[in-house]
Image 1 (cartoon, rainbow, N blue to C red):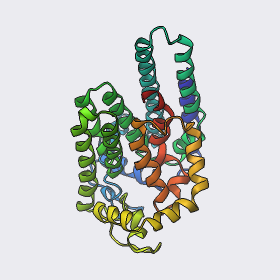
Image 2 (cartoon, one colour):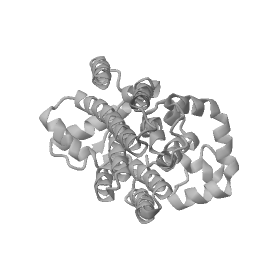
Image 3 (tube, rainbow, N blue to C red):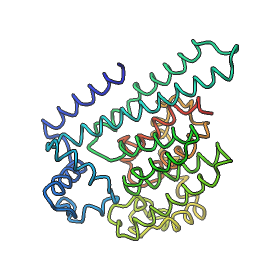
Length: 329
């Protein structure tokens, strides 16, 4: 009931935003794309940025989303979808925690009381619904990060159940969310390497596929607004540089010039703390969360545009995973 009430709040506020025309560029671009696709323009061009829509993070998931738009052809459809996806991600996280607690109760029979399990589940629920960044992310325009978060949580739960084949299937819509889906997949691969050495090949494969997907989007021309473009300063040390960034050049810059990104981390330490503290910090040490933390929180902290730390949408998966990952350790 708590999550149903939370969803009602999200939908109510989204309706207010939409009816009062308070959405801006990101929502307008996504809404224009689904409208054009629904009306037969299958390779839409954004009049807002004067570029092909795919040049914006290679978000292939927009085409399946259009099927919903055809059934309910209103602009608010995207905002409703975002709210539903975000809350469903929390549902998956709580379901996973409940399953973990049940297994722990069986393994520690005689040393485990039902009250302990209830407290863990209630604590996770409290942290999830009270995180102000969750609402900031849901109310800030429209972004496919909410969908990517849902798919990442579904893949993570399948991994914990040792159903790597099912997890691999969930990774398909995950990478369809664009180059950021590739980054999430890298994080999941790192986590799988850390917590399941018997499945190291799957973890390594996830990392390799995630890197390859990000690189593929770059090769296909996603350069005006690709996920790596915000790290161009690492290559030259100049904040105003527009150098083209590849995954290889990014990794080289991270290793060769740690002073550049460490300086940025120090300058943003207050905002980083503000992003992490609502998760309760309880999941930060969990192997299941470390990969996600590195990719999402670290990535948002050192990317040049500050909006990724200020808006919450880019870090949504990190908030949910880290708020619920500690029992998985």
